[in-house]
Amino acid sequence: MESIPKISITDRDKKIYLDELERNAIMYHFREHDLIFIHDPQPLGLIKFVKKKRQPWIWRCHIEIKNTNKKVWPFLHPFARQYDGAVFSMPKYKKRDLDMDQFFIAPSIDPLSLKNRHLSENQSKKIILKEGIQLDKPLITQVSRFDKWKNPLGVLQIFKSIKERVDARLVLIGDMASDDPEGPRIFNKVVRQAERIKDVHIMTQKDDLLVNALQRTSHVVLQNSIREGFGLTVTEALWKETPVVGTKVGGIPLQIIHKKNGALVNNAREAADWCVKLIKDDKLRLRMGHEAKEHVRKNFLVTRQLYDYMNIIDNYTSTVADDVMKAAKYLKRLLLK
Ligand code: UDP
Image (tube, rainbow, N blue to C red; front, side):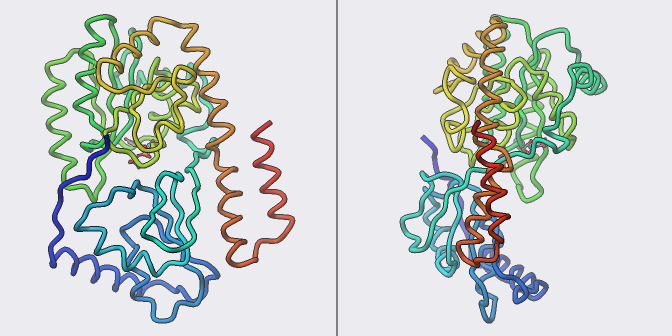
């Protein structure tokens, strides 16, 4: 069950939010565009400061806001209502209190980016060894910000239980979001607890190639979130033919098909059991890895998302040329073959 964080929002907080948006609204030239996409809640209120709205405004919300905080949503709701449409990552995120067009577009990854492009086994190994991580034992990785919703402390518990049954290494790699005041506190707690466990590597550098190599080389990737938007780290690992063991929150169940390309787990014990099973069973890992890549190829690549976005743009503006729409549709169909 995903819980709602307990936070308070003061009048001062609201003033800071609105002042910042007003400053930003002055800098942008909204009048020149045929359609505006606004991403996430941070700039949602910009619409309040646009004197004359000349085009459709669409709110692209990447996070899960089905169960909203009772103090924060009433403040944001009047801004959201001014939009012409909203895009959420999954149908289950539909907002009943928003009377507007609602679209559902799953996020996607770019297979040609540094983080997702092909690396040979040797290249990956070199990148990891350069960071001082020995590849003498099976590797388990979680790539996530040091945030309580990603539950890195829970990952340490899972790893302790794995270590009792099979020798392995754990890598926790994650940066701290600059807008997250809790990050450093969680990070320090993780570092302290990890000191008591052997073979744990904690890394904070932002390095796409290293993330790529770790997701590729790991025997298992963990995503132990308590709460999640979509979970692109899951998509990335599956694309690299690595089975993922993850919790049943946010977009993770859309991506992990239980027992087919990974495992959906209810608690730490199940997570540890699945990691041990996958580490010990090479054939299972290989089979799941193959399924994992296929699932991403068919559903979560950027070409599919391109088509979905063009549909929305065309729906509101009729500015996308017919042959461009056809090409995008063709690209999307190609993936399903
Ligand atoms: N990421 C990264 N390095 C890190 C931690 C995260 O590159 O140290 C990337 C990760 O690969 C993914 C994104 O940040 O592309 C996180 O997206 P996700 O949807 O998993 O979680 P969010 O942080 O948006 O809640």
